[in-house]
Image 1 (cartoon, rainbow, N blue to C red):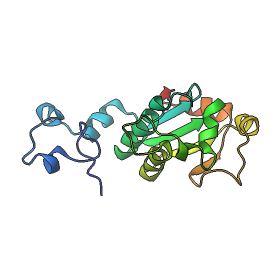
Image 2 (cartoon, helix red, strand yellow):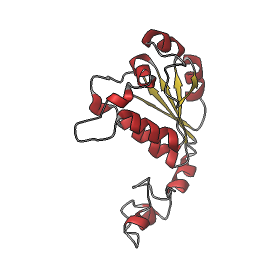
Image 3 (cartoon, rainbow, N blue to C red):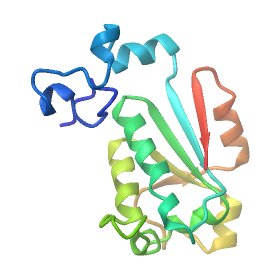
Length: 166
C-alpha cells in the first residue's frame, strides 16, 4: 500500500524512508500535507493529452505516465487521452517493445501499467484509432474507452481541472 502523505516522494512517505521524517519534502515545514495543499488549490482532476509524443524518441515517453501515476497516487482523478501517433501505444506489443532510455529496464508499457494501476484512465481518439490501426481486438487491456475531441474539451473547461499536454 502506498503512503500518500509525502509530496516529495509521492510513492512513499519520507517518514518511512528516513525515520524520523527529515522534511525533505518540505510539507512539515509548511505545516501541510500534499492532500491539504491540493485542497487549497481545489484541483480535483488532471487531464493529460498525448498528441505530440514522438515514438522515435523513447527517452521522452516515460514522463507522462510517471506524472499520471504520481497524480493518481495523490488521490487526483487522472484521465489520459491518446491522439495522433500516441494511439499506437495502445496496440498490444507496441509499448512493450519501447524502453525510455538504455538505463531503464522498464518498458513504456510498464510505466503505463503503473499509471493505470494507480487509477489513471486511458481513452483513445476514435479518428486516431482508425488511422493507426487500433481496434478493440488488438488493444491493451488498460484501454478504458474511446472519446473524441468534444469529450476532451468538455473535461478541460471544467472547474478544478488541470490539463497537461505532451
